[in-house]
Image (cartoon, rainbow, N blue to C red; front, side):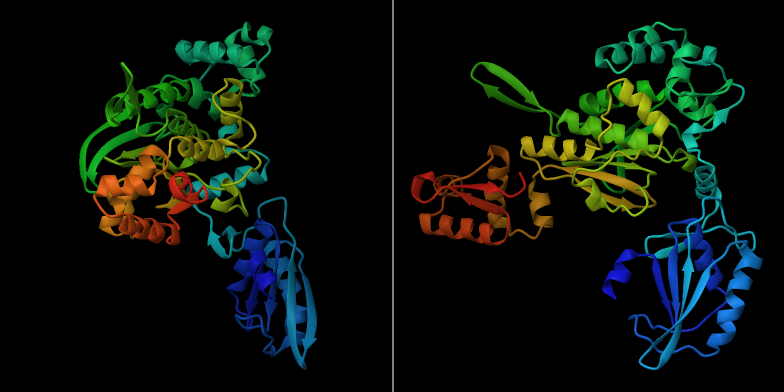
Length: 442
């Protein structure tokens, strides 16, 4: 029974109600599924009255209301009867009384507005960024953005050199950014000097916050998506984050609080995977010790955040946009973006970024090791300096704890033991002076 629940394509209902036609519609529009009538929420058979009438009526009612065929089977367990309704996935949109329902995870939703438009496009074999845009031509596109693409594509080697010397329209056609004589939405996003004339919210907002409700200053990055990348990263690095200065011999070194390759990857993921039909710009919120990227994005059906934390196939929400970014050498095509973000942060001893959904969008959150960070994790104030030192230097020893905190060796041993037991530090080496403690996950 637990397996059935985990599959997320099974519903258990104690009796039949008219509203369950919506569930049948939702299964047909998604990956299909099964509805069991006469089972309670635990999957235990409780019996079903009027089972023979339902067995005869349901297939006909579903056919008349939705134009699809379902299989209805009678089963018996411990002398109690129940029904199984088998719904196959359909390659075209199915509506129930003019409404389109969709099964997502373990819930059903009625599709409306942009979500319905995206669903209908996908059922027609199209994606949002592949829709043609009338009234705009290759001559209307940004020469600067097209030149940047040619330069980067020549360096990446992912576009034939002869194609890069073609006229703009031929280049766009080769990149699959044309639909007959029309430019696709992807071409407008990537190369038009003002894509917001056609696509609301096609820009990036950056704000610096002292607290969640105290915005100190902000910027907006407009223009072709290809040019937004460098402009946004430049603002982040020169205005919104402060580099830490350290000296190596006579050399002065400036280290950004967050690795530039990780921020770049997070930005590119947001630009490539954003649901642009939602009309809300990408938002980057910067604080003193953390920052986060938010975009109106979705994971592929059946995926969870855990899929992003291991090697996974690349399934971009906007495949034509992603393909152009790949040809230009901005991104990879192997679904390694999130793994690269984690690796870059690990290399410079930062906490692993968090990936989660919030306010109908997807968030990538970066943080520095700070007193506030560790206190939020529940660490006692007197132990925080140990973790801060380990985070900054990569490891810490008993002798360093004694020196930095001015405590005895037994006290330092107790502190390190508590942090090791709490899952914050991992001991390396055997014993004595060779023993070091490293932050777990850094």
